[in-house]
Amino acid sequence: MPKKMTNVDIWVVKEDGHIRKALENASTYFDDKDVLNVNTLEAIYAKESSFGTKLNNRGISAAAGEFQLQKSLAEHYGLYVSKDNDQRFDIDYSSIAAARYLKDIDYAFSKRTNLGTKLFTYPIIDPVEREKFDFAAYTGGQGTIGKAQQLASKAGKDPTRWDAVKDFLMPSKDISADTINKIKGYVPRVSEYEAEFAKKSQADKKAKDKKFIKPKIQCTKGHWITKDHLHIFICK
Image 1 (cartoon, rainbow, N blue to C red):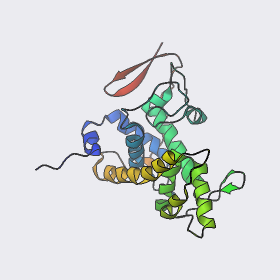
Image 2 (image 1 turned 45 degrees about the vertical axis):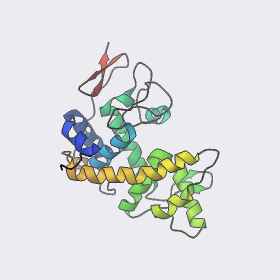
Image 3 (image 1 turned 90 degrees about the vertical axis):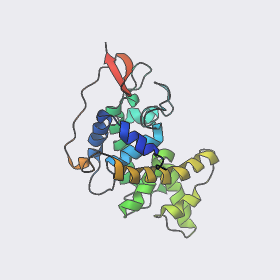
Image 4 (image 1 turned 180 degrees about the vertical axis):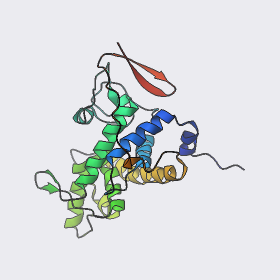
């Protein structure tokens, strides 16, 4: 009996070269101080939008697009977000924003970082272990994870080990029990995707060492079409 194909198997077979190149280009924001690479972006892309098939609606404030970025976060990283033109749906631009955000998270957890009133991250020296915190913060926010680190430390647990810190994610007025369960499930799932992509993807794992290529400047007025599974903005 043939082995059942996984979601990654199916994606690798049909993967569009444009998407692969976009993720390779975005991975140039990573460096030798982290373990992040193009397979990391593939894994987050797979988890966040189910390989670009679950995108939500353009222009909304909530998470949307290829990497499920909230409007405020997308705009912080320089993307246009409106009902007519939402670059969260453009793989070239959204992958860059996601990579920059992920790298900023990684940097924040690599040193003691002030996240707000009396809230700091605990430096995680091991980049492999730190990546788990990166994934958790990508979906749950840096403050949420930093607070869990703080609670773990107060309880005498190691605030630099995800397996210890995850048990100190607590429901509050700002975070629901469902969100906490999502974070706890998100980290191993994305890690599994990343490992599988590392074995099966055609993407260049050394792409992060190459020179960044700035996408062509996109106009602000026009309309969207979907072609060959890509979301393309046609300028007026």
